[in-house]
Length: 170
Image (tube, rainbow, N blue to C red; front, top):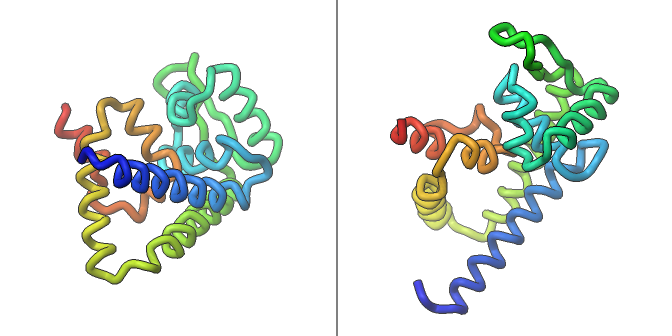
């Protein structure tokens, strides 16, 4: 695709969708920024390490620790010793954190439903097929996968293209 207009329109759509999803995800969370993504990552990767979380939400290690401190103070996250490595911390959601993660996922789904409402079912299916293909092409590492899926509703993603690409990469 070399048509600059088409590239521009697709880029604008990507930003509009990202803004809608991010805004919906942040609505139930006490703070803006990476908190919603952190809660969703902990929801679908219980026991995730600070390092993995840091990678997925694009924070420095100290920034991730401060975020976890705030989420823990708000009663949303708890830390436990990692069973395999006592030097590492495993992160889990509290009941309140799990409830908030469910609200984040619901808001994200509602934002996408609003955006897709202009498409008929066949167009929506075509877009989903193309999105699957493009996601597979974007995955180059575990770190990239964490970033791509940071706001995903893990339970809703049957046959996840990102996980399938990682598995194929070995």
